[in-house]
Image (cartoon, rainbow, N blue to C red):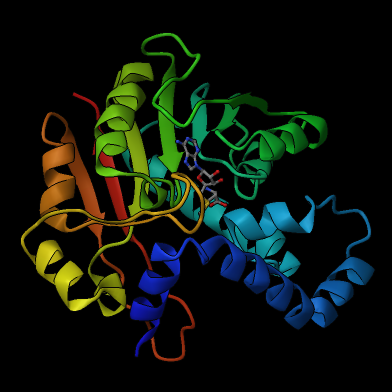
Length: 268
Ligand SMILES: C[S@@+](CC[C@H](N)C(=O)[O-])C[C@H]1O[C@@H](n2cnc3c(N)ncnc32)[C@H](O)[C@@H]1O
């Protein structure tokens, strides 16, 4: 029996939360040494509680803090291809405990204003207390943001659609484009073809027909709720706007993770 089938059974039995909690403790223990080394070398870095890091990423302080600065630089490079990144309002949708947005004031600066939103109240409480240069907001799971129409110039959502149902994709894309200025850009990552190896035979059939595949039976939005996105589905989601880029980075030998697809879209 492969991993996907085990996960399917655990999901059906309502046991996936327990196995995920167990994974939290396993990962924490496994990374204890490198995380202690990080703390000794970086006494000034403020970190979120371990569970918040785990829920949105993985408990590896080095990756949470330093690799995410690389991600911030990577984002900046993509934004600059399509928009003059000065005096702009930039929103991190599904920011979690601030892994990426915390670096943007330093990495981008340029008189921009930074906003972060997430449905996870604990993550946002931590961000509000600790990342003072950024404005944070708790949103409901359903598509609702407090910003006026056309208020934001750039939105990015790293691995957020990956935890939502099909219906939520439509609702959220509509809401994101409501708060985005015409000509503004949205950058999101999704679980594309690289993730085919994780799908069961039945799921793969659905995926190859161009339909989104959703693994539910857990609370939507949680890390264990997973969605897989064929190109056809994403193209149809973005059909009213201009797709600027779709990048499918292939996994390199020795990589322990699967790269997500990158989509950059301009609001018409
Ligand atoms: C895999 S984590 C990624 C977190 C962050 N983007 C990062 O790259 O570190 C997914 C994030 O999406 C958030 N999320 C899930 N559903 C959401 C929703 N409906 N609205 C806002 N955030 C949501 C989760 O709380 C979590 O922080």
